[in-house]
Length: 73
Image 1 (cartoon, rainbow, N blue to C red):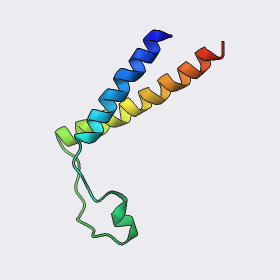
Image 2 (cartoon, rainbow, N blue to C red):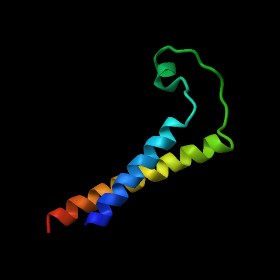
Image 3 (cartoon, rainbow, N blue to C red):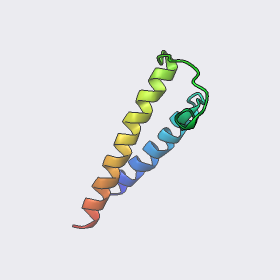
Image 4 (cartoon, one colour):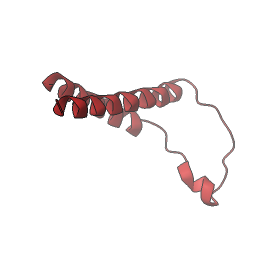
């Protein structure tokens, strides 16, 4: 149980770092009348950080669910 909690702390830290390292974009502001800056594809480090964020987020959710199930036993 402790190893799962330690893993969750590590994943949470890495997830925070990967999100903070990403470029700032217009985000949802373009959906509400913001300026459309054009379409571009993610490349290189930006693409890696995006997929790392998705992967780490999925791992974080999985570890959270595992902790809930293990506490109920």
